[in-house]
Length: 430
Image (cartoon, rainbow, N blue to C red):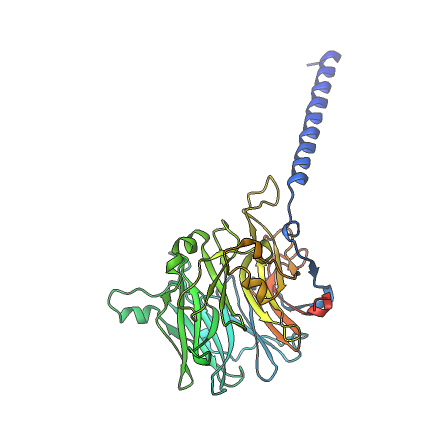
């Protein structure tokens, strides 16, 4: 069938109109995108710095998922890092560094066999009794990972080293299925990120005791504490008890979890910082003046401290606090077309003072302080969201060494373990 010239002209005109409409629609979408585009930096009101490339060291990178590391400095000056060979669970991988993170050993193979079936992320602490006896502690929660998973709620595991991390005990399980079978009508505890914090407690006269308060949460976002003592060189944990019951509505609404607790040195106030997993609120803060027996009503922190899995360390050079976390700022969208409930895809460190945190203790929001600075330690590539930021952190003579995981290179398809090193003076922070 032959198309006459008039029909051809109509088709051409219609095609031009369609293309014009598509271009207009595209321009409108681009205008809306850029007009509503928001980054985390746009929501931060303190100076922002970035770790230079030469401050970043790859610890471990493979074609498999590597994540959720922790880090501890032994008394001999050796760094030990541990992380699971999978997303949150899997055999524990161990590496060491004798030069404060500049280089790392091959994976250590001579580790306890029970670590091969770890049910969650390993968490490391160095503790010292009042008699001066040092230990390194490894804890790992045993939560359920779904109905069809071989991993079901089984309390938490604990290993200990009494020789500077050279040898370790096999996992000892606490408040899991064996314990529950010996109790009338009890269920094993469903422990997630155990122990997210570990705080040495003091007596009524302000003297340190040989008791440490550990914290974890469950799938109902109930936060528990368990008291650690060392008996004949072995860890003993008290039965976990909920400790934010007085604020249960807030705890549940914000889904508080992965707590970090630090002690304010002048007043001995315990400061609690929590991830807010519901993404309805920023991260939360609360205070205790009675060694964790009771807590103030949790309140929101500013964008500068909002995120997941906070880990704090004091700078020995300046006395400032450095708090590492995965940056998550809720109640904002990256742009009008995004389905995300939050902004942020970086691993960051907040720099501030204890006074900055204590400013949130009263009820006057005009006293609230946002801190000194924020340092971007690593940013995920555009393909991978905000899966990063679980971190171990130590400070040696004013130098910070931190290990975390993420998709930190442009085309990384799996997260890997990265170490960063810096001094606050590198950024002009005194």
